[in-house]
Image (tube, rainbow, N blue to C red; front, top):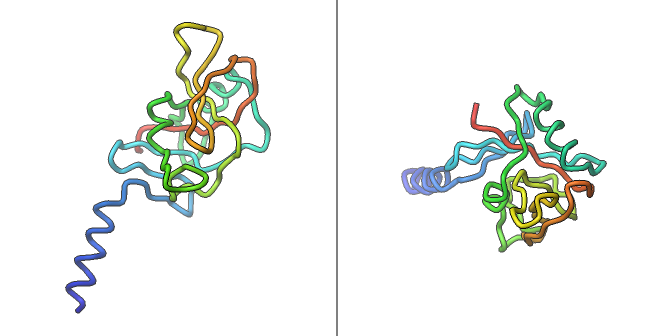
Length: 136
């Protein structure tokens, strides 16, 4: 019985793609070797301010940046509501900035919301921010 339990536990750990560190509040994506800030800043900010915020973030070290739209889409899980991986506990119910500029409208940037919907808006609009960095 113990062997079966250990095998099932091992399978769960091997399949764990996103793991939250409750001490730091950082969510690790073990398949893409990324670490995510699991925090929602209480105030929204412009795109340029979001870039500066992430670059200046010192959460268990530095190296943070604003994620691109593909990275943002990788934390979406449509089987959940809000549609974000279960390892995340802090979720703003609006749009999050990505670092990806809309090539057709260079004053606009791609966004993703808590439902997993992609959109774009002006870089001067104010949105939520979630920072990412390579695994430390």
